[in-house]
Figure 1: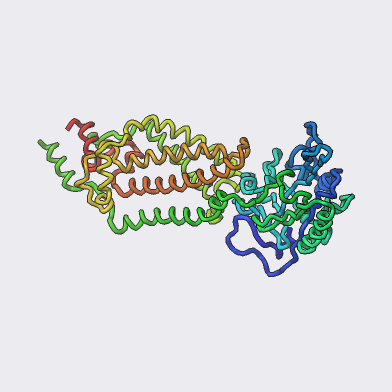
Figure 2 (figure 1 turned 30 degrees about the vertical axis):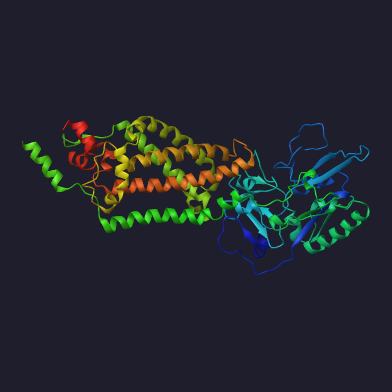
Length: 296
Length: 206
């Protein structure tokens, strides 16, 4: 996105600062799961705006269709049937799944290809497929299991939060289409305020544990949820306390300079050993001994 | 080709070809692998025709190297079993590094250091092929926690391997008269007598 070259906050496999003189407000998408009716209009709008079409799949006996995120389905509705102790208190929980646009994105940290993953100053994490090499490190780094590699071209894909639309002051396609207003978009601050109002409403209606899902383990996210039972995010398939895995931190963190320095030092040790001690030649004495033996 | 008929045969042509093929694979793997490890090394992907090509080729070269190293392993493992003399040699390696190897314990075909290089390489290659397959997204899909662990193991084993090979290459350059054993297979009698006396006795009967 040439238009946004001044707005890049982080860039994969890049150790110097990205162009960052311009400050922009952080945006966020707020998904109010309590107002979602599971119509999948967001899935359709996503496919339509981004012009991607998934393969025809098969029904697995649930409403989940497609059954998982794919390189062509960047958002899917996930349906959870929750049976409570009182059998008349059945709950149908629906969550629109997709990239969370973490403030501290595990995908970006793991990506080895410079500029294949960028984070804009507004918080959107975007994949630039022209730089993607298809290694799948983004999948290894992601705490939410979001990126998918295309079988067709070997590149990784995921929700862009409609970075192209947001760049020209439009809301993401899923937000635009949602018929119940369950998906909202605005500044992160406004969305948090919106969530607080909604949470208070839900608490008033008896959902004591209603709350906002904006996990701090990944620095907060730019896609947030209002959950009926925010104390149990696992019941809608969300990790309770997501963070970049410590192994990923090790692998793409301290190991890099440490290993590079170690390899450089071993090489230098060899060079300076040679310079200070000189080569280990066969001694003249040994050669003479052999000559004597030969003569005898 | 003029050679001193008194030179000692250290490696057969087939062993040398085997070794160089493994060496070539190692160089390709190290260059492409480093590029995925640290942005500092990223420009190395251009040697392979870009990042995507480096990513495609790396695992296949790894399989070829493992297969070729397996042959080398079968050829040389019995010559690389650690003995008490090797341990003695290793405990006095400081003298060797200091440049005076005249009084080191008598060594067979391989000294303790060479044996360490052999076993370290074998272990690293085993770790890398196993973790590498787990990381190979184009064909495999393992549980993400296992992939994360494999990424750490793969990188760690690679760094150890690179350091070991730097030592291996340096030792061959430092000890004059060594590299020719891998070029055309022979060493001088004096070389063998000084560095591998027990092996010298064994092949010459002296």
